[in-house]
Amino acid sequence: MQKDSLYERLNVLEDRIQNACDRAGRERSEVHLLPVSKTRSPDVIAAATDCGLNVFGENRIQEAMAKIPRCPGFLQWHLIGHLQTNKARHAARIFDMAHSVDSERVMDALENACAACGKVMPILLEVNVAGEGSKFGMMPEEVVSVVERADGLPHVEPVGLMTIPPFANDAEKVRKYFRALRILRDKCEEQTGIRLQDLSMGMSNDFEIAIEEGATWIRIGTALFGKRGSPWKPTE
Image (cartoon, rainbow, N blue to C red; front, top):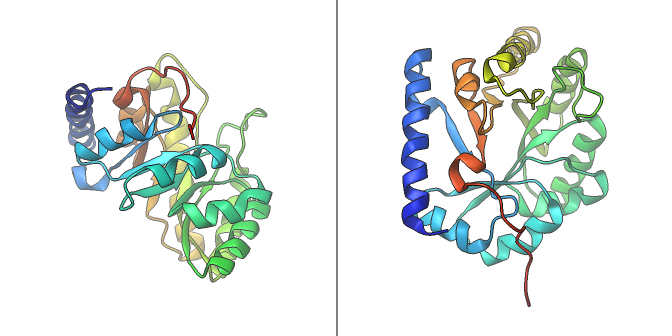
């Protein structure tokens, strides 16, 4: 991907983000763009970095472990995909934040792994708001107790919630799920007194609705990088 093409996509994306913020009466600074670099090459990430982006989201541990050493060293990396407990030690080492802590088991594994690394990792709890059997995430009724427990752990810091709603061609149909996550976050803050400033919700097909409903992180892949081609694989 050429940098000029990426820069044009980013400008269009920024206009859409700003317009959604305006409709919601929010400041642009309240919404963080998280480019999803899954399957993208280090060269593409370098081009994105040249456009001013310095935080990226990866889904797969193995891909991230191979890719991150080939990218500029000053970048920040967020885990946005499902984490298996046996890979928590790798996640703790290479990621700066985790958006997809979908169970207490995963949270405990990250706590232990971060303790071994001597670091504190901000985490978001992934919530299966729609109750889909095919999706990861804890049930809404579990969240308050998990937030309280997370707040007592020394090496993970609960900073918000994340969700992936059911896909819909009409983005307006997913508004209720984003709204439900915001309401759940507000309920958690009221019941626990724990500040949960972040809502990670919204992707390329529905991020404007998510912003209108309170998203602070939007996870954008194709709207920024274009359609995926062949996945990147490391070469010796």
